[in-house]
Amino acid sequence: MYVTIVLKLVIGLASLVIVTRLLGKKQMSQVTPFDFVYALILGGTVEETIYHQDHTIPQMLFSIAAWGALIYTVEKITMKFDKLRAPLKGTSQILIKGGKVNLRELERASLELEQLRGMLRQKNIFSLKEVNYVFLETSGEISVLRYPDLDEPEEPSILLVNEGRVHEDNLREVGKDKEWLTQSIDRDGIKLKDIYYAEWSEPTGFYIKTYDHCL
Image (cartoon, rainbow, N blue to C red):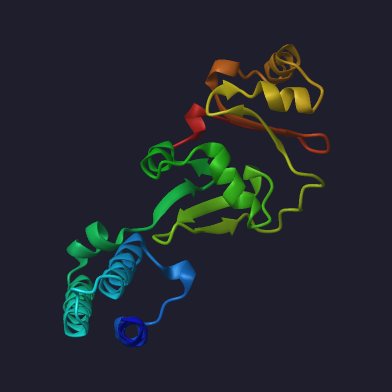
């Protein structure tokens, strides 16, 4: 029994390596949801065979070969036919275009504005005013095109209005209140109800985008 399990492990590992190499090399950042699903099922197939005595090694090899052949076929088809590539592999989305947040694409990606800001911070970008374009790639990573020759802010900005809602916690964090916020933006002739997001930092002040300046 134990010898059989070890044998299945060795053969299963070798088979997975061979199939993965045949399907092509990819970095983790390039893995799409489709790639993740086929790898998950491929691993599950080997796991089921290892821990069930009624599943033989030939059955395991046949399952791996059949699944690998299916995925290989799908990969080749998507490379040949562009219309099938988007449904199966996905396409990149433009979340910010020309400095304007694309609300529809942000919603389609099931992302909140603060989540997007968090992804930008991982790219060492601490304010939306630095961003010209943001692409959400099929891997879930973002690619960013910054405005040229823009000086780095001296400190990270604080999001005071988030998707049209005043962020009370962040206001308290900077020692301000809603009345201060309303008065400050009124001086610039902007109404609170028109704001999609508003960032603020001590050195640079406000950076505001109204719904009119979103896509």
